Amino acid sequence: MVCAVKLFFHKAEKVNIIDKINFVKSIMIAFLQNTLGPYYQYIKFIHLFFVMIWLWSTAVGFVHYLLPVFKAWRRDPDDDDIRTMRDWVMERFDHGVIYEHVAFPMILLTGPLLWIVGGWTPASGWFVMKLVIILGIYLPIEFCDYYLSHFGGNKERLRKLGDEAAYERGVQRHWMFFLVTSPPIMMFGLMVVFLAVVKPF
Ligand code: HEM
Image (cartoon, rainbow, N blue to C red):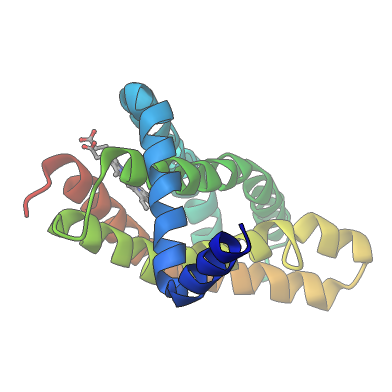
């Protein structure tokens, strides 16, 4: 008995830590594939549903409300009526973007599930490129967007603090953020969907 225990620990010591981690990882992957495998198409449906919300939920508000009112304010920055409208639209947009910001974590949850359950590997170029775009471009953009819309940069909160200068800085900073990020968001959004659907390589 003692010999058997000694032999067990002796053998266990010799097992490389990387091998142990890989062993646990493959058990977890096999578990997910066995339990969620039959539901792959359902997970894909949820993934796609939130991708649609994430991509399009702010489009009308941005193009037809935010953009015209900010352009009018740039043309006539001293007009009080335009400024009041600008602030109102900006605060409503901070609120409206909640759809997008609920959808994004759902995508980040269902995407990796599809990856694991579907057994996708780096051999699929479309998948690697999609991940690079999401991690390198969208994660930092969304990180800033969460802050500007819901946390320190939230306009309603800034207004309630009563600091007019901070409010104005908050609005203008958010506007600059839109100007810089809108073109890459549109371009890479289209690219990610193209890569996922067409899988060209
Ligand atoms: C902004 C983020 C994302 C967008 C816009 C997006 C877009 C899409 C779209 C449109 C599809 C449907 C493809 C089809 O039915 O032909 C899809 C599927 C898929 N996505 Fe995403 N996705 C995103 C994030 C992620 C992440 C983070 C992962 C993994 C880490 C991921 C992994 C997958 C996988 C494995 C599929 C299934 C492909 C298939 O079965 O054909 N996605 N994605």
